[in-house]
Length: 113
Ligand code: AMP
Image (cartoon, rainbow, N blue to C red; front, side):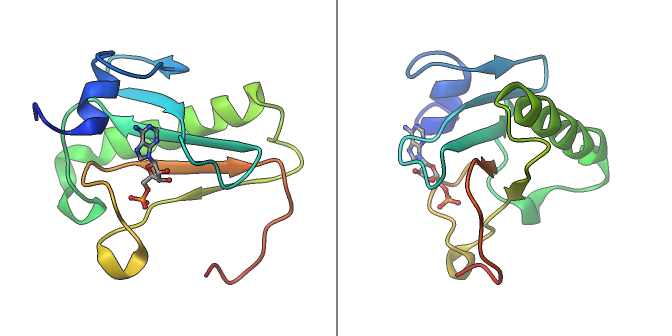
C-alpha cells in the first residue's frame, strides 16, 4: 500500500531496517517501551492479525522464528522477552499494518495494561 508507513519502512523508503528477508522486515520502534523494542512486519500489506488466514500460516510461524533470532542478537533471549500483537482499537492497535512487537531488556508486568 503506497501511503502505509510500515510499507514505506519495509521498502526502505524511510527509516532503517535491522533485519529483512523475503517475507518480513524488522526495525526499532520509534517510541520504545523497553530497552529492546523491535517491530516485525510482513512485507506484504496486511492490516490486522484478524485478516490473516490459512495461507499465512508459514508467514506467522516465520515471524516468531525471526523474533527469536532478534531476541538472541539483542541479548534478551535468556533473560526473557515478550512478543505482542495488538489487534483493533481496544487492544491498542494504532498502525494498520500487521506488526509484532518484540520487547525485552526489562522486567515486565502481567497482566498487560
Ligand atoms: P500499535 O499501537 O500496536 O499499533 O503499535 C504501533 C507502534 O508503531 C507503536 O509502538 C509506535 O511507537 C510505532 N511506530 C509508529 N510509527 C513508527 C515509525 N515511523 N517507525 C517506527 N515505529 C513506529
